[in-house]
Length: 457
Image 1: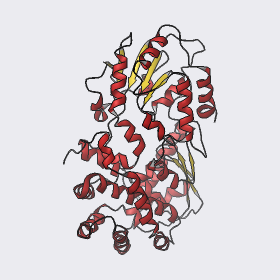
Image 2: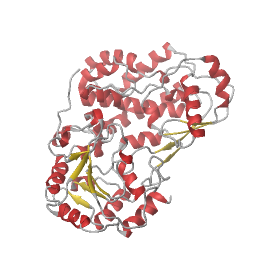
Image 3: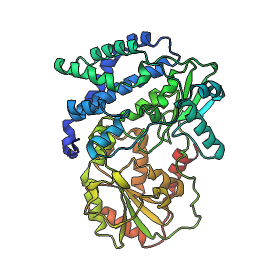
Image 4: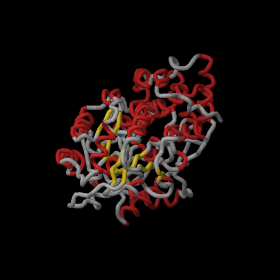
């Protein structure tokens, strides 16, 4: 295993996710009609084709990121999920994600008919009954009886090789054929599973659940239509141009709901409690907390390209540290826990908060003022729900890549003097000192914006 995470923010310019994505779409469009015939007997053929398109882009991106050595190691590993493989390949730790359970085809036959509305990872699980539904759905889906069709696999791989003709060299394609034989997920060549109940199966989840290829994607092999209600499951969605992960999740969903920034459907986020810390009284700030982002593999640049560019920007990190040197109070640092702790903050931290076994939302509370150098941090939504003041630091380049609604939100934060560019020397420290000199509450215009866009939706 090699550690390849040596790129800097500037060196990301050498990689071109947009070109890779455009080439993928062009090449994939040439085989879509063939795939429609190949899966014509499958009830969920459209979703399987969308899933295959995503996986092939993932496979291409591994090659773009790590070359043939990475493709070989991924293909010979037990990882079904390229994202999780990239953390192992670059950082050396393994985060398992397989949906494991004992197999019982008999129980599947008996119980699958009772599955009408399935809750999977990322769904709204906030009651004992919903937890039961989630566990029942998982039990049914991991017990789906699978039958491999080797002849279909061979035919499909042959077609994929033709799809990759313009990407890999002729010499490499022989290797790629072997790697595909090892790595191609079974959902693409296994038989459709006949069930007695043909009624539509409604599934609520974070669509990324299927894109991890942990086993849940096999639900699309059932010969009953699977309707997917997709829910956003983290920050940063719909915020940037060229966020391919959002497109992949949207493509496989019948309905896809954002947390407020989607141009189509939105629903109030369910990841963080709703306003249980809000006080009617204005509070004197008591603690300044810098929330760090986690480290990300280079591979993620091909999935969340614009947000990864933002996270690789060391200028924002250095700016915040310099500004905090001019603040009259001590500051706290909240690193990303465990294996995802980033070395971008080494030597720049304040008093460290131990959050290895405590969720960030259980650490940040009323009385805190929180600093983010990641405009897509999920914890921003916790701060919104609890009306905790937060400060945002970005580069001017980041803002150029914001989508319209994200840009509107940023401007409201900026008008409240709570957003700064990483070249505005002295401005953030001046504002923080003002906040901590007396009682402070979120400006009314910002509260109203949050209420309209993120709360009452």
